[in-house]
Image 1 (cartoon, rainbow, N blue to C red):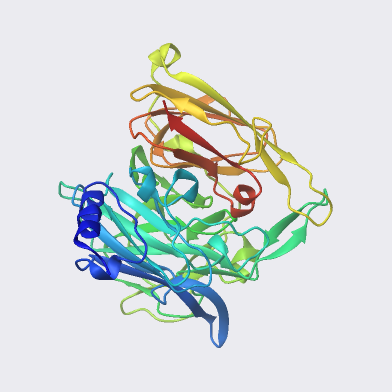
Image 2: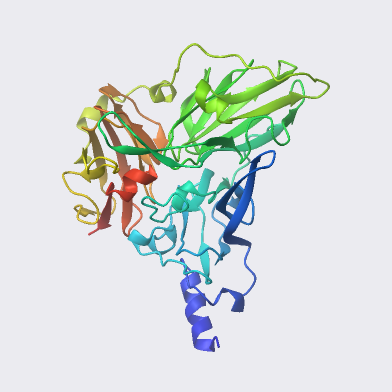
Length: 448
């Protein structure tokens, strides 16, 4: 029985952030409900993948929230595993952010939880599972547990004739050996919105329309390169944040957890393919048909000659006063440790693997410069929870104005970002590749 005292406790918690399994059904109706349960996903005609999904769909439902307006979301866990939902890219208290390492309670199998929070900042975010998978490729981000999260701004947003949300995701993971004997996940199927190229409905457009594409890489481990045959892509936002210099590019690169928003002028009538640039990944299914009204025929693809991408083209000129920055420098060195033939590498930050990694103390209001020193032979898409950082230097090149929550630090290079410690509470930092995170690539910041 839920007592009056318990209801008052819940109401008090809801004023900030609350997660309390088992009592959600006794409270007022939530704004949204997410049901975590086994699901058989048809990725191609009569080809099914058994996975876990939100609300019996992959990706999960699009949640459109309003910046600054409190929202309540119920989560029911009908999977056989302990679960938690992370609200990626939002400035939330630690106990509702959705990372157990920060103190958000897990949702046990057969239980419910309620998340109440005030969403900010505006922009394209996402939500996903944040659990340990290890070598079980039926858990964590290897499943279909991801969904789009759009935080609508207080002011009027730009208007488009249409907008489409696209999630890039890989299924059917298995371990494959690399040249040094360590193991990494490889995939049987690559999808856009849970479907392989040619299966399901195309994106239907009309000549003269201006379309906005919101693209998410929700893969557990794989980067993806995306091009739109016959069309150019004008990048207007990275990780949901407007870029200082929008640019027209021939293709996109998204590491795991990154989002890119692009404008497309629909000025080439026909039937086209929007898909992965690398031939073997498109052959695994990653593509979607875009069909103009009144057009028919075989979808057309134009193979780019080379892979092209550079964060810095979207940045503003580096401020000359940057050298006088009062940000406190925090060096973070990334290295791997060979765990033996047939095993995945172990990962370290400053020589230590989680949970033995150091916990760095932050002072509220202070500016910090994180120095990502990648001494490994792998690229790392690193993510900082509950904050947004500004790119300052990538592989020796200065920049400013690009705001992100995830950035790819390529092998053997150094990247530097700055953020202001303005959201007290435990804050998780980790590589967003599921296998790297599971094998120790995590650490916590805490506010002093």
